[in-house]
Each structure stands twice: as C-alpha cells, then as structure tokens.
Image 1 (cartoon, chains in turn red, yellow):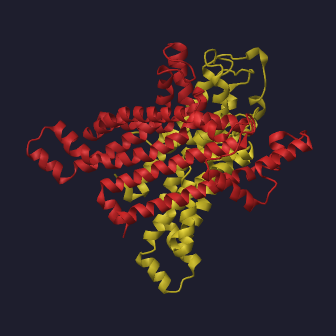
Image 2: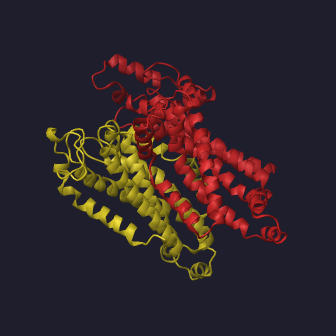
Image 3: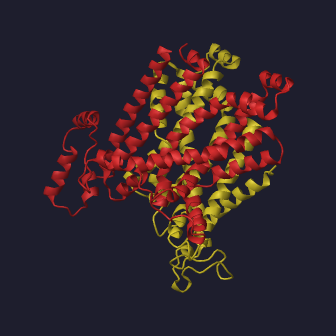
Length: 309
Length: 265
C-alpha cells in the first residue's frame, strides 16, 4: 500500500508541476508583446514600463519562472490588472458558486443515471434498454450551450418557473445543474448498465437466484454492490471534468463562478486572472483524480497489487 | 436499431453543405433590415436573424467552419498523437517515461479548459482555433497508440521482423501501424464529434469565429439574446450541431462494434 500511495502522489505532484509550468507559459503565447495587447498601442511608455515591471516581464525568463513558483508557494497568484485586487482573493469569491454547481450537477446526474442504467441492464435488449441508451446517445450529442438556452426558453421564458440567470436561491440552481449534469448522466447511465451487466453474469448472482432470493434483492444487495466500483471511479474522474465543463454552463446562466470569471478576464485581457482560473481548476482536477485513485486502491486490493508490481 | 443510412446521410449532407458553403457566404452576410427577426416561412426557410440575415444560409456557411475545424484538428491530433504514441510505446525506456509524463500534464487539464485558455490568449481565428484544439486533442491518440503498441510489440510477427533485422521505421509503419488503424479510426470518429462541439463551444464563448462570419456556436450565442422574439435563431443551429454530433457518435459506435473486437460489450 505504501508504494502505491507514494507512486500516485509522485505522479500527481509531477502533473501539478507541469500544469503550473504550462500555465506560466500561457502569457508568453500572447501574440506580440503582451503589454501592448493588455494596454493597447496608444498607452504611454511609462505605463507600459510599469506594467512590464509589475508582471515581471522585464526579467529573464528563468527569474520569472522562479518568482512565479515562489509566489505559488505563498498562494500568491499575482494581481488583477483590472481591479488591482489579488487573484487569489477573486478566486476565493467565486469558488463556492462553482462547487455548488458542480455538486448539484453531480446529484442530478446520479438521480437520472442510476435508475436508468439499472433499468437498461435488467431489461437488456428490450424497449427500456433501447430507450435508455437512446437517451444516453442524445445526451452526449447535445451541447451545454444549446441545452441551456433551450431550457431557459421553456422553463423561464414560457413557463416562468425559474429565474433566467444569476445565482439567487435554490430555483436559480436547477437549470444550470440540469444543463451541466445531463451530459454526464448520459455517460454515467451507460457505465451503470455495462458494469451491472458484467456483474449479473457472475456465479454469485446465479447462486443467489438459485437460492430463491427475490430479483429486487439480487439486483440491489448482490449485484449493484459490486457494480458500484467502476461507477464510483467514473464519478470521481467526472467531478473534476465537471469543474472544467462548468465554464460554458456558467457563461450561459451568468453563474458567478470561476468559469465566468475566466471568460470575463479573457475579454478584458486580464491575463493574470485567466492564469489563476486555469491553474485552480486544473489543480482541483488533479487532486480529485488522485483521491479517486487512492480510494479505489483502498477499496479494491487488486488495483494496488497490480500497481506495486 | 438505427440503421446506418441515417448517420451517413446526415454526414454526407454536412460534407456537401461544407463544400458548397463557399458560394453562399455573400448571401449569408447580406443584411436586410426589412426582415429583422422574421420567422421561418415562404421567404426564408429558417427565418432571419437580428440583422435580417438568412439563418439557412448562415447555417450552411457554419457547416463549412465546423467541418474544416473538426477535420483539421482530428488530422493534426492523429498525426502528432500517433507519432508520439508509436515512439513512446516502441522505444520504451527514458524516452517513454518523459513522453508519458508530458501526456499526464496535458491530461491534467479538464475538458476543453486548456483550449479555452489557449484560444483566449492567442486570439480568435480559425488557425488559432485549430492549434488550440489540437493541443488538447493529440493526447488521446497518443495514449491509445502507446497502449496498443505496448501489447502489439510482443506479437510473434513483430518479434520475427526484429529478428530479421527489419529497420525500425519499417516495423513501425508496416507491422504496427496497420494493426492500430482500427482503434484509431474509431477514436477519430468520436474525436470528430467532440471537436464539432468544441469548435461551436469556443465560438459560442466568442473565442472562435468572429463576426460577421457565421459558426454554429456563434449563431446560438447571437440568438440567445432574442429567444423570446425569435426562438428559431437558437433552435436551428442547435439542431444542426446535434444531428451531426449524433451521427458521428452512432457511426463511431458501429465502427467500434465492427472493427474493434476487444471492446465488444
């Protein structure tokens, strides 16, 4: 177990380091001089020099990288060019909204996908199965930025049931959560189905049935308990992906999370904030993935034995 | 069971629209103030937008962008990813270790977040869009190729080729690549579907195709402001995206069942 833990942590650390380096390089991908792009060609030379110094762009690149990492170690992500506030402060304001949306979407996905997946597996090859898999195919083919406006049109504009946008109470969370969660529900339903089908073919299920255990019991107590493992892994991996996918959904619903902060900052050419957003979401993603992996290894000894070979 | 003619028909229509799109660019950008927000009818099959431009022609032109970008990105990703995967998997050792670490770093960015950041920083335009999306897309192909090569290189025919002193590039091209083509074709089909959504998504965010040119994503973005008065502005481009992506996904599923026997569930 010790070796497994160590190897996963080392991998995670290297990934995080690489992510931080790539994010650092982002500002150097700005075509031309980033200072010109941010201030415009007509800015006074003194202002340009001041910005160059405050971003550290006047120094050689290795010094810049060193300063960047020593800043990171103190949770110092620089300063917004626009509001002059610390990037870490801006992020902290937006984190609760993004987490709220991600978890709500996860919840929506679970309550759609689990019953649907079980139904499809139990009724394999019948109408329910085709329906569920058709839904799943449709779910992965409809983009968030279309589903969102369509839901707003139906439930907010025509029926007047939910707010159009913003974050104001439970009602405003429903549509964004459904939008973000539905695509995930589609993937998850397929996973539940295939995972359950695999388990249903095992000997212990046949034994349980032969003993005369009721079918509902067989599914829930015997089969589902074993089918959860791959589903739980996917869940962990997708929670991170939800954080990334939330960007578009947040923009559609004007949800005040990190994703909309990132897009606003791109529009204002406020690159330090853009870097902060990308870095934060990606680090969260690596963290969640690593935790999922570790938990998976903890639950299922086959994984960690396989890994420490 | 959905027959294959449905997805193939849609994709053929997409290709024809993309090729012929060059001839309708002018009328797609033609502003007609008399027809602002006009609903679908005899005059315009899909209605008009907030500047009186015909939606049908704009979707037609958008098909061109979406095909161009998705084919461009998938081709570029396939070339880079397969090359990296082949070398990493076949060579092994420290080269493999370094390349896997680099792949891990790219995989550590969730979804299209990196593409959004790259497109946002590099600025809009089709070229930058293709670069930004390829920077995200190549990793999937690289990982798939490497995994396949690791198992394929143990096969007898490869061992025999090595024993016969076949040069390395011939082993890679003649003995490994043909066996890789099936899973790569499947991955590329799903990749196309993902890239159609990604291109539209970036254009929706204002990071892709710039006005007055039309992309399916920017059409949805424009339409979202007029939903109550002109729902057709959002409806039509969304249906176009959905049909194309659905067709690619169905085709990918079928190809996987046909070509890739290992994952038959």
